[in-house]
Length: 247
Image 1 (cartoon, rainbow, N blue to C red):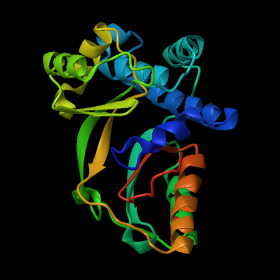
Image 2 (image 1 turned 180 degrees about the horizontal axis):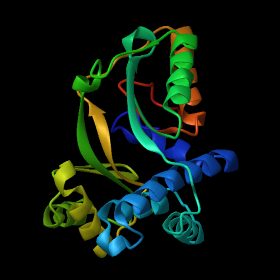
Image 3 (image 1 turned 180 degrees about the vertical axis):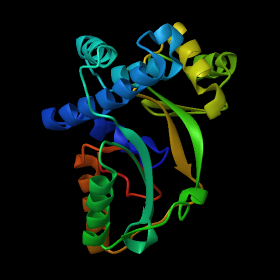
Image 4 (image 1 turned 90 degrees about the vertical axis):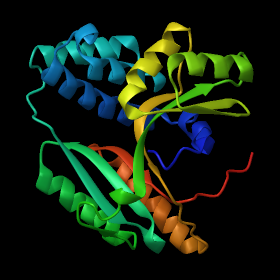
């Protein structure tokens, strides 16, 4: 679940329940299966698979699980055929929402999403209705809670790796890249010994929408929760400027 590139969400990611972790494992597993079928089971020859393995590790998916998913997909153990779908719509107060899904039943997924948006005071729109508000960026997030890395070191390593920019804020370092070089930057930083809380290409909004009314804010949060709980939904991007969480 990705709102924008402000990483107040990291604590929530760390505190996922076992049930939520299970859902994350399932969703990433589905992406890995598709990548294996499209590009083969060898990460050395399948860049997309390498990206997803890094994403799985950032989400604490055990290595045994990753290996099992790859072997299953390579051996045609999963007979489902998934297709990529992107849905766009508006939440309460006109919050822009983009939903990326992998589904084996487009009618079911579209029906579920339309129901969620309607129930929460929003509406599912046409392709292109909100995507113009977002641009793609490679986002790499490093947990520096133990202050292992200095700002000067991060800057030097990011420049050497070819990153566009970085933000050093407290215990979190957020690195942004052009999507075209995201993989090269991530792998260069991995080679320097960095591990990531997040490493993915994301849609980042150009503007944000505030919700002042608490009831509408609750509805927006409910929409995000319902989308997050749907197994077909892989990623959700939005431009809701959520209030900072209290420590």
